[in-house]
Image (cartoon, rainbow, N blue to C red):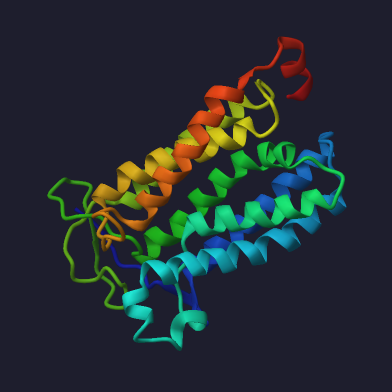
Length: 258
């Protein structure tokens, strides 16, 4: 078994999870700045304004989905609804995308083009955030006797005392990095704009639906966990769109956009 005895709090009451989330946001912004520098059809002002608009919406929606998922707890602890910890990645993705789409409607850039540019780094950012989850002991898996099962030994860790579990979050990090590589290979090779973002949503949703059978989470609806329900809805939207709309770009166009 693999033992993790790291204190979930890094320093000054700042948790490793929060540090990794901040790092993921920084990496995302820097990624978009680099894309502009390399000739993307966006301005620096557009990138920074999108960040200013998208990040608060991502946080609010992320928190909202988490509270809805854990409503049995928060209904008895209403003071923690705003000040407590806990975020849902789906809320961050959908909330951020909604805010940036609204911004694009009032600006001179195409949301699909922007979404395709940012899709790969969303995976990278999620992988970074999951490193924080791994250290902090968030989202433990079901019990396992496999040699790579994880045991959290620090008494302040939320997963302390539950025994060896599947490192589902580590599995997710590996999956996210693989899909990150896949999206990099597909960049500029699909039309119309927004297709790469739809593939990102689809592949991520496939993972969330399947991997949650290994996670210790309360059922949300029809015996499924919240992320699984959302994954089904996302797939029901993205798969038909990909089938109906997405096509390979001409070779000349693909080379030009790389």
